[in-house]
Amino acid sequence: MPNRVVPNSIVEAGAPRLSWRRVDLRRRSAAACWGSYGAGVDAGLEDRLKPATDFTKLEVGEAKHGGGATSRGSTSTANAFSLSSGNMSFRRELDFKIGNSIFRRLWVSAPSSTDASDGLGPLFNSRGCQNCHLKDGRGHPPLSADVPDDSGSMLVRLSVPAATQDEKEKLEAHSVNSIPEPTYGGQLQDRSIQGFKAEGKLKIDYKEKPVTLAGGEVVNLRTPSYEIGDLGYGPMSPDVMISPRVAPPMIGLGLLEAVSEEQILANAVPEGADKDGISGKPNRVWSREHEKVMLGRFGWKAGVPTIAQQAAEAFAGDIGISTTIMPFPSSDCTEKQPECLNAPNGNSPRYQNVEVGDELFDLVTFYSQNLAVPARRKPDDPEVLKGKQLFYKSGCTGCHNPKFRTGEVPGQPHLSHQLIYPYTDMLLHDMGEGLADHRPEGEANGYEWRTPPLWGVGLTETVSGHTLFLHDGRARNVTEAILWHGGEGQASRDAFANLPKEDRDRLIAFVNSL
Image (tube, rainbow, N blue to C red; front, side, top):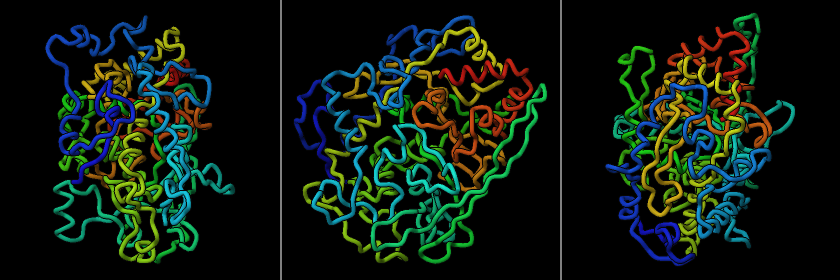
């Protein structure tokens, strides 16, 4: 693995700004492993991590569920997810702002006079990171069949079952999470630069399914069916597996990365061993940075171990931009797309012979690690507190684990030793047939999904202009999202459905306060 050039200000707290030095990535990777709490550190924190028992008042730190890193900004504007960690030093704000500018950059095809921004495609889903993560928030499926959606905030994963011994061995060794479709690769690129054909378009049809709740209220759930049409490079493999997914929110990622593996695995229970029917399974995936198998934390199926790798894979797969972690200028193009493989690219000696060199890439990673969790709204409202008690009583915390503590984050003391309330266990759970995509990813099978964090859910409409939830945006509000729960979530779903309407409203009010 090559050396990478990184700024001292990113690696070492208090180092001079924009002072660049060369470090070996292996040494840096080993040093960057998140620390755990030592003896005597935050002595009272262990008690605070225990499940809540008093629902008449807030727990310590609960109003600011990102700990000291909770945003200090307004929660009433569309920029509520775009602010930096609230306890970040002024010195690091410039790093954050430069990272933000790269995150918002619109890329163009190569060659271009703006060589710092060229290399788009040739096949891609979006021209920039911000286009998918709308205002750093949640993406959505096309809002109407009659109105084109150019946001790129929904993409389609593609794979096929392992057919050869070599492919089976790669899956068993975790060197890959899935086997790409032979012609179209691991992701459907529905856009292209001039002179190239896009790979295809996703078509969605919905059928309404009524569900009757206690008291007679009827909720209609949208059941989606998917079809890929307008194929640009011939037919797909007949055994192709597809998984449509919307872009998740960006807030709090650095805090989740800072939670020790030990804490996450403490919530994992072998299937069938837990009497409440909830197991929880870690995904194990290959780390391109650390060159080893690691715990998966990010993505809808926990298929990515680190924020840096998540960013590199998004640059490559979504935009067609190469980095030293993913040094592939033609992105997801396959051998059956030779024109794509041979297209001009933006690789440059100025940027370590890739399109985004490490100096800029590390700033994008820093930005992604430090998009702050907003403060809660009216968390001490009596109705919200009653809703919290119902959330616990209904068994929702079996997957949506309320609390974690973060470890020591080298160079980022503002993320270190924080008590956080993300409401996720970062583990995989079988969510039943209704939500199944029947597409494995790493150790996740076709029924399993990672528990998504709930912080910021109540600001989705304020930030992203919609209230569409779940991995493919099928749920039009929180109630529908809960009613789609099956498998390990079935008991909690049924408990919610059987509550009196006033109690359902209280539980929803609690979730929307997060």
